[in-house]
Image 1 (tube, helix red, strand yellow):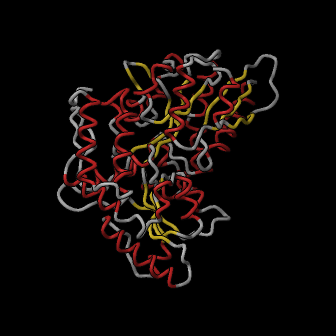
Image 2 (cartoon, rainbow, N blue to C red):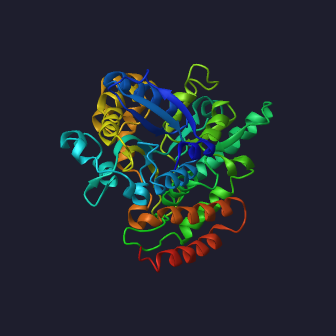
Image 3 (tube, rainbow, N blue to C red):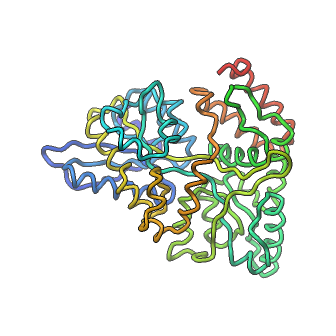
Length: 425
């Protein structure tokens, strides 16, 4: 695929680094565009360029992870060398890993061993290390501490408690004159972000993980249906109707403007809602996401995270791999953690005094990442994207009042059975 074919697909290009030097090469990296991802990527890329004498072109990917994956598949299937380094989701090695080089020849084992073993395991297929961990994620509950204090409420432990607290605060704030105020915002658009939200609800209610480790489809059960029906009850009550089209930045915009009591989002949002110009600076805190009720209920956070992979079609794999190792290295991860609360994939940094001084809430996150819930990408392999699409559409239909949880999950099971040939992925 030519560069001219990529540009119309909403890619924004920015040059990181100085003028090209005679001995250097140009490496192109695709980075995310949510929150501080672009400026932080550009800063790290510029530092590597200055160190090595190479140049880096930074490509801004679409905000929607689903759109991003579709675009990457188009580029990689065309065997285009236009992008050397891809920022990839933790679940993508099972889907597009065949297009990336094995990084093991470029990195020593001690460097690999610095990272969470579970993340390295997820990035390894058939003995090949297809990406290096860059930053990790798990869903968090953000809340307005000042409003909990105002209404004499505690941090909710269950979704039922959150629903009641959100109603109380919403009614009070609207009576006080803010008719745009809502109790809760989250990622409700029909895309991968909704899969992450809904997996947290279902696991939190003891409803399984969509597909079990044995490949059996587990999502069609009463607890999972109850989780989805609970979430559907929020739409138009404590959550705006528009949440059905929200992604991460949409939810953050409402919460950060002071128009929501609670928000489900990833850790990246913490530095932004506490930025100097944020209307809610100093008023927010985070907690584990609430759990459901009944047998098997527990707090659950979907494991996220982003990694860097080198395309097999790169003209400069050695330099591209060197850029990956620099950006995912301990010092660069430490800088990003301090500057922009990116969650490091290196456990030792959660005990680093400089990191904890800048980001005290990191102290509570290491355990959350170690016990986070993985999406069923490993067991479903190349079919994961189809599984997730079917799942998020079933969830979105439920949220939109197009059938209840039980009916939509029953249909989902039929669809997944057909896709998997009866659970044989």
